[in-house]
Image (cartoon, rainbow, N blue to C red; front, side):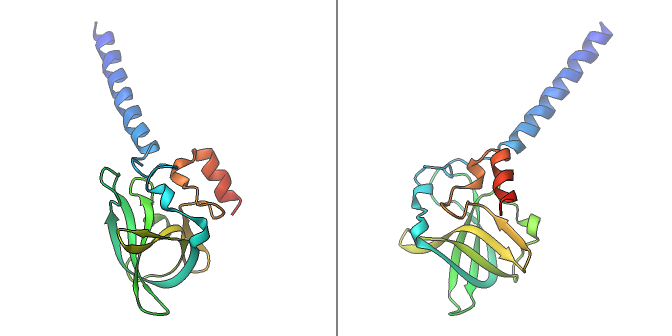
Amino acid sequence: MRKLAMLVGMAFLLTAALAQAGSKAAPDITGWEKGGEYDRLFDSKESDSFKGRVVRILDVTPLPGMAAGVGLQVEDKKDKTHEIVHLGPKDFVDLASIGLKEGDEVKVAGAWAEFDGQDIMLAVKVKKGENTQLKVRRTKDGFPFWSMTPDERQRELAGD
């Protein structure tokens, strides 16, 4: 009886651990999915890039019901305007992976989209320094990395 109780307890803990691991393996991308309303704003014909300084790291929720996202306010080096850059869902975007913080000099590449009357850069990648970058979309067509399987994402990053 004691052995059965211990097995049940271990099974419960294993189930809880797997559920937690599964939630991290599957980030909340609600509203950010490929082909969704927000994703359809990305038009590769509007591709552009600019250099600047990160003024603020922002929490963004572009449309009602979307999962929280990460954005940047970047002061354009050329004309000193403050541009808003959307990176992707908060559960997916890892700014710590490149040590990105306010005040950093960056190069942002992506596509411009009009959103609520304002031009927003939908990022493909943010480059910090010569060798450090955070890629969030495929360059050729803007396919979001968060909609790829881990294997597809790994192949895409390896081909960079």
